[in-house]
Length: 309
Image (cartoon, rainbow, N blue to C red; front, top):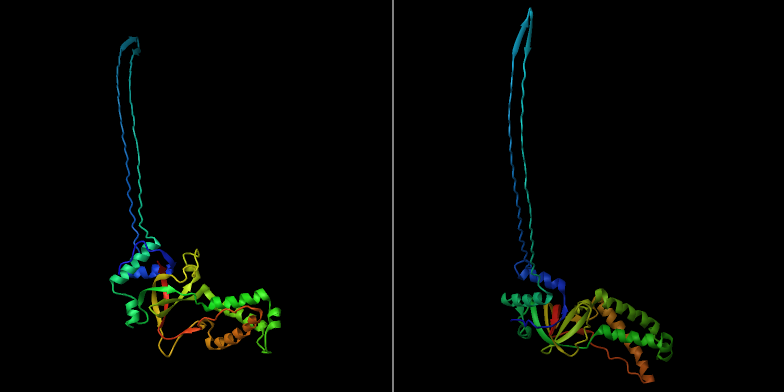
């Protein structure tokens, strides 16, 4: 399975991409470095010496004696002429050229090479493997599916927006019954659910692939470096590269309240809170429709590495 070089990335987990690619590419990321150094030096020395010596001596001796006395006269003349020249010529020059060339792949190139390497090594499963159940947890998988608008977190945010707009006192005045769960309790509960479901900036995104629900646990920061939103391409087909972490059978499910650590209790509590919003019907407002709380049969949980079109 070859990937198109012109695919456009919508979502990318850069940390996973670099880590997995370094393994599939023989344990390293290619960076080439090249240096060229040239040193040039010129040295010259010139030594000239000229020396002239002239020696001249003239002696004259005369003895003179008179009586018992004697006289001696002596004349001498010496002349030395010398000339010496020493010259040094020295010239040094150095030329040093350093060139460094590095080949660093862009994230788009990394992404394309990763998919091609996984496919070449027969490590990449496809939608066909998902449909015929020839896939196990831990496999890398490439999918194409439709991004759904269902989101429990966004639904809870909508309920919280209603409370913020109308106010707790106004909603308590039109609610029916005398349940202990009033809008003061509901407001605090929904705030806590929002905080837990958005912990570490991760949320669930549902993608439909051939009548099968694939739940992607996405980090909102990875939608092209915070420059796009996960619902910008709602109801659009996207390609997904990820790792399968869970397959649902008849005995288990993928619960959208699992991040709370008490999904059963919070599911029951949320159901009671939702009923209280029926009071909006009396003033002509239809409350938001609650999405699925969990997915059961034919559903899969995938950690996405990238989403692209």
